[in-house]
Image 1 (cartoon, one colour):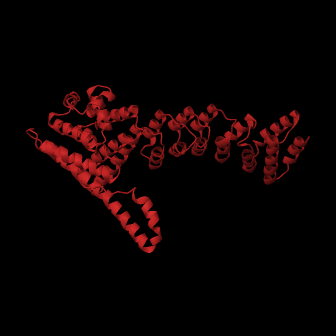
Image 2 (image 1 turned 135 degrees about the vertical axis):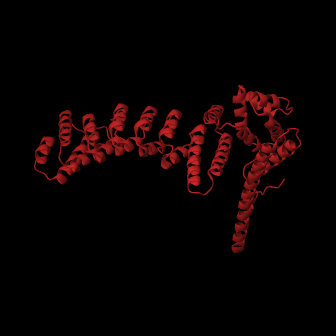
Image 3 (image 1 turned 180 degrees about the horizontal axis):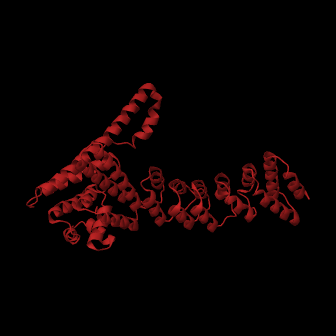
Length: 410
């Protein structure tokens, strides 16, 4: 009887009054006990309000039912309403199925797609559908949704579709589950854009910009291979991507060895030589070193570079893996110096190009070491200034002093 009186009253009530009454009816439906007949009449009343000419009424209905176990027919009607109303139920309604949400993403506007991407129950297949057809803004929302698990293939598709959009790229890089190969692909996209910009505006010559881009991408590849979460499968995916883009060069492999962190070199040599990664790693870490030369030749390393490879492997074995910070740069510099001495004394006829490459690596290591050392020196100066202002900070300084050590130059 109450529902019937509501329907009669709604014929003459103002839009704002109808909106308030509709909200009260919807809240009573989801929160108050009703007889079966009353519930049916309430559902009929809510269905009739879907055709109300005022958006205020339909919006009030959506606000009351968005996150509730509401009648499916009502929710579907709201889902096909104007954007701001549809987005409310698309973002939260538990009544909508995955098929409903996929359809909403396919035919909906940007607001609808973003609403679906923000849901807490996005499945792996729904995430794939969003990435395949949605706008970049919705993809960015999906990538930033902490409750969503996204397959590696979907992350790759997001990179292929929108990796050149800064906001999407940042959202991808912020995900801890992003595969190493995709991180490197994004880094290449950034480097390529910067190269075009630098060469186009006259900041540097095109050749210089291309070389800086290449060296930067090599550094990124080596750094990514060092990541503790870079498992064997991800390393080999990274190698495959480098090969596909013609970036798996002997210079890159040598850079990995000279850095002291040989993960990328091990994976690259294993792939090029057609052997398991564990076998290549064992050869590089074998103190006898008798198999390094055959491994390099089997991997197709040019004869002119093999002395540098052999010397680098020996230096890494003797000096050990470098720690982080300035000490890592210092260790890399020691390795490069050892390789320079070995190559200078080798009987290779024309090693001028190799020596020039090694000199560039040496300069890079020296610069990185100087930058880190300068940072630590500046930190010490700041600490000294604070102690002059407040001597009571001495105890705090002593607590942290053991964690910061300036590297000792080799």
